[in-house]
Length: 116
Length: 111
Image (cartoon, rainbow over all chains, first blue to last red):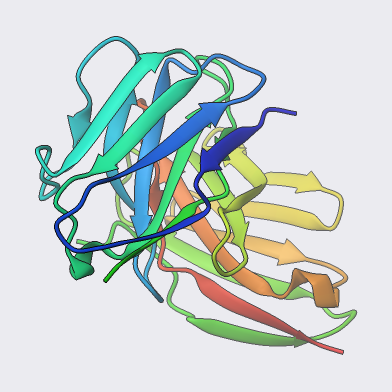
């Protein structure tokens, strides 16, 4: 079945530095990927929609200059958290639909970010 | 504004019995609903989905029921197994591909 993989699974970075999280669709091409964030004991919240070859669409309240999203190919989207702060510590998850109009969305394993 | 709600944060069920997880939504535009299972520090795993043109979908031990007039859906797991212990999220979508998630229900299966 369709597989979405994220890397790294967990990362610790210092305040003020930037960290990049990759999301790959391993056996299908994804024109659209989604980035979510989950704080402890809360639901998954959509951050942005990543479109291959064009600018990402950000949800209200998500700083596009802080969370840079690049979807340069049909199998890779990256989320870069710039000038990270401790409050950015969270679980970040990407997802992709396995085909346009398909009824199933597959999620990556998630990436746990801790900013110290 | 929480458009998708799971009002029970937790649920405990005896092994072998039926687990029923509930989800309510407010946006009548939603036309596709999904259930995900999630373990701590892992990505959600897709379980089962249902389109708004149906009122029931079954896959093995999992059955999802949709009541459009009540804007309510439920996930039934029978028989419940210890490996089913996890947090379950319902999600809804319409037209585009964005999902709106509920807050989750932690299911604990008691051996």
